[in-house]
Length: 396
Image (cartoon, rainbow, N blue to C red; front, side):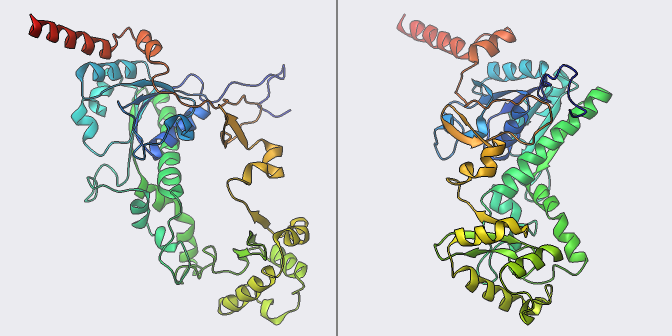
């Protein structure tokens, strides 16, 4: 039994249970942050916009990033809706938003206004460029934010333009996950001091922070070549992906000497002069070409059978269709279903702690309950009544 286990063997409650967060609808990083908080037990109330907030007009009921939230739709251009947000904030630990700088203030829900109603509020601001600086008011997306961090230039093959890494680095790693870390950190500080905090979370800043390890390599003379020619960007023959005869791919990550030795031995290359000096970068192109030819000579199953048990940092490159069925993913339950939709299980895991079973988002599913909890009148009903009165007066 771990040190966290209870004496009676029961599971402890999710680590953020009892935390209440108001999420103003956005796309990308802020929803990812909301998902992470909800995944670990926080009550997240997502305030959506009339007509939805997805720029691609997707079915948001299938959006994994929105899972496990409570939901209410409000038109924040109406003062009665803004007042509902303020009253919700009075009951909450924090709020997260992804507006451009100044938008929340123009709506009347900036940090100064809301922290006057709740001085212990953690106010999380998620932007691409940050709250200030010459680009602060400019439009952009993940690709733009990671481009100025030195990150994008390092991704892709040496003879090709930089390769967009999905939107993993800006939106999710440098954005949403950084905001979640900042939120929990600020929450801890606020509970000690009683004073709220405002978080200025920028995807450009976050992407730069994710490059810390590359700066370390650079300072040690180990990251001094162009894109696709360094240790971790596909330049090293022992840290790269290769195509097999059946068109499938494998990944080799044999950086340490012992793993490299096992790989070379398993491929029958031990003692080959080309492979003796692992870190001779002048030989890397020839080494890589040789390995590419070897792996292209057989199907992936052949290399899995030969290398999987040699503990040489080998793995198959799986598609999204294949990943949930992998034996390791199945053994750990790394993927779950919610309302029939497959998705990653909440991470990270906590020993002896109950998990939050994901549930898919439904628009306005909690509208009546949320309004009742703060004793608010539904602004849509008020607006409908006002419109009816105007029509009657016109007709009269």
